[in-house]
Image (tube, rainbow, N blue to C red):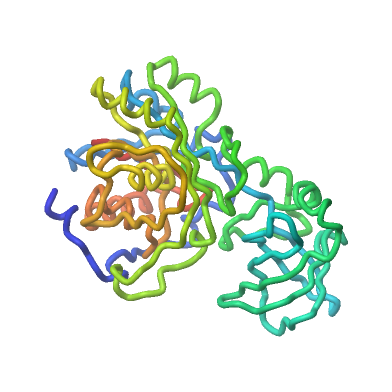
Length: 359
């Protein structure tokens, strides 16, 4: 097992699997913790338990520490109309802090032209295109409203930046519901363009039950960036370069993790984003507080060293997130568990079910 986990499978195609469209979750499970949970063990391949996220306290021990990602998703997805009448969608990726300039995805992006003005959300915002960039990105100016009003207009009229595979009728979309549901209950630091989806399963009631169980909690921040929407475009895993994402690891979180390890407790990462922050800041012997950007790519042969337990969703074929799971379980076993999950009717991707990977 250890040798298989450590083996570096270098072909992206090695991480493909067959997923029927019916396995993709288009709506979130209600209540959140009712989502199914496939529990497996790194050291015991025979241990596979089918449970629910609400059962999480029974799989964690007194003295364990749950680490969550407190990033808050920005409601920067907009539906608009061109002067020709065609519908268009924008996802703002970056904004100038003190200006009107921005960069974002526009789709459909064909036949757009520099200087064109597009109106979004029935006149709430108007942009003017300045520069075409690669893969559907554009640089543009927000010409209406005034710069002082832009943030409040986005907060009032913006939509949840749902992944492209979640199809919504813009006219029938329940904007308020999606904005609430595509946000964790502990989100507090604005900056993400997508949700840390494992955390979407956790409720205040479940967190309280974990606390009663004796499971501690601390937090990191990693602002999920545009790379989450990008497929791996190379054939060899070793050639892939991750997009930069901003993180913060506080001294308080480091102290909580150190206390947990000293008493023999386990570090439980709620999501791959949390795992990447912890592993970015761990040098093999100590965890160092700080902030910055990370491009860390966890994959077989380059797996986690600090994280003991991982709560995570089921991920896209050939994705870096699937490779992260394989760095803990091995490629063959990961794909075998995914095949079993498909057969058992688990729901995949952002609004889908979850896995719990134990030591």
